[in-house]
Length: 502
Image (tube, rainbow, N blue to C red):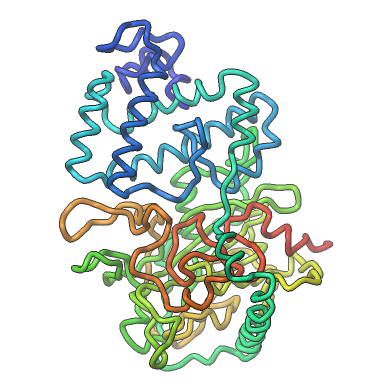
């Protein structure tokens, strides 16, 4: 999007072969006849790239692809705006964000292509006149040209808005075969018992065993009063009102609100680490004190709010007993902070990277809506917190082995051995080094981490969640066995909470 906003001279310095994407730039050199449209050549180039990516099994699953718009992908947040982006400025920004979703995904796909497919793609690109372009330049120029073609008329724009949907992560065929209307009754009873056990654990003050380790975020610069609020105010000055802080501001917010994880550590399975591929090619963790973080968004009470998401990873969930169906390779805890416009937390929530064990810890700034009379899972709210200025003072208590969150406090514990962790970026997991050389995403084309399946999947399949218990990529977390719910649902908080009267 930025390329065509530059003058032709500046653009030519950045992407000399792609200034044709701007109306004022000279024609793009080509081996084809000059009258062949740039979009047609880009369409062929993207088709060759897609074929190679799919054949190599390196498709990125985070955002959904859109039919007939090869340079655009959509998240659940962006899909929620599809019926609202009627004004030209709003549509332009929405389209730009769709382009960015595709560009980031394609960069990881290209980086993860093995040598053989990479050579084939380069040959196909050379045939279209793009052989000398680095990936970023190709995606900037062709992506923009293809997006122009997909939005050239009012009818095309209306069609794009209608197709910009994210399929949910429930398997309706499995639910039909598993007689879901009947089986959900028994499963709902078991889920209610589990939810009560979580409430009971939170009511009891979390006992801090001698084996606990407090993972505390590395020291950052002092937090200035109103700093979060000012960043959010600056970053939402756009047509959609979405807080979009720059990279430096994102990192600052992530460090300011990073929690302390108090982990009962009774073995290597409880030590946080960095996901990596082991000698067998399957995922494990390497020793590292790091939480992988990202920004996200939710729409709450008519506003689009910024969310900060942190994930810590463990090498496994060990079996608690022979035949433990919940045990398996790789495990983790996801912690999310939803910020109000003033930069202070409204709601915290947590799950495991499988989408399991989703719970909410709201602050006094919101109130829970009355539960709906249904078998479907409602918000599990085992505790509430007072109003707090920053999420950084929060302590999250994690149980040994299961890695269940068993308590949340507004202040860090004393007299616990401390290890400092740094805040890394979750997108780094889309390109990890492999034992054989090269890189590969932690996540497969289906969004699931290979080798992390649990035996519980054989029991829970009638509920329609594929490979229940396996670790998943952002955007692919179904969090309710009974009912339908996704962790990145744009209106998730609106479903369960309302602003408190003040």
